[in-house]
Image (cartoon, rainbow, N blue to C red; front, side, top):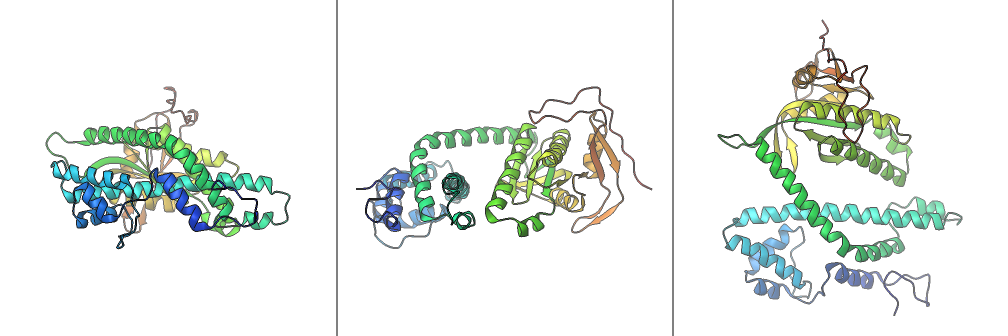
Length: 382
């Protein structure tokens, strides 16, 4: 019997049946055989079929209406754990289901992201091996992986899963600790609300639409991945929080104004120095935000977004609140710009942010600027 992910001696050019490969790797990745029916899962977890259905749906999977053996002992244990949390009064059912959805949405994106990374590594290896073959251009232009690539990716993931699982739990606990620390820092002694003061920044790749038309899908994917990786390095190095990336744009927040300014300037300079990426433009605002489901909302976020849209390539625009806080800090220079009417925001008088003339560039390691830099200056055009 041939190991999944390899070819047998007969029909070397015919991959194993897709269904068989999928079934084998499903059990290997889940770590347990599919041997339980939905009624057995709910009975073992001591919950009703309705509650089990709600949990399964919260995980983002379609409701199973058959009595096929599609579940494992792990499904039963997970359902019992959530039911126990509700039963013990730690969370009510709606909150427990919302927590389950949060896990599911994050896990779905993480699984897709990591699978794609492995698939790209496999394809790169195959491209190197097949570089001299006539159909190499065809292989290069594929928008979806071949069965051979997908099978090899599944094989590698099956080997890596047990090693990566502890890292997932570790990363979750670390980020949970950081989130709780931020929440406590934001909490008012009198009351706790949904709003908090933050510096919000957007960085946007310039002329991205034109690039999309010129580049192959694979090259475009590499460009976006590089942009996301470099942005994440810069943002985290200065203690910022990367909220999300959307292709050609990243959104980040910081507690203070100075770290946000350092991030924006470093992002501009990092992309300018890169041989692959186009320039970026940044817009930043400071004020109250609403944090919900891992995202941020509010007028401050909208203002930062609109400032990004009107910024020139390789420049950073900040709103008046941000400018006031930065004006008293060394290392930055501010130049007032003309008043603008931003769509959906209203009148705004932004300032152009630059690094002070004698200030060296902040390193990605987050080393502070020298104390000898000039004090920031600000002026307003008449």
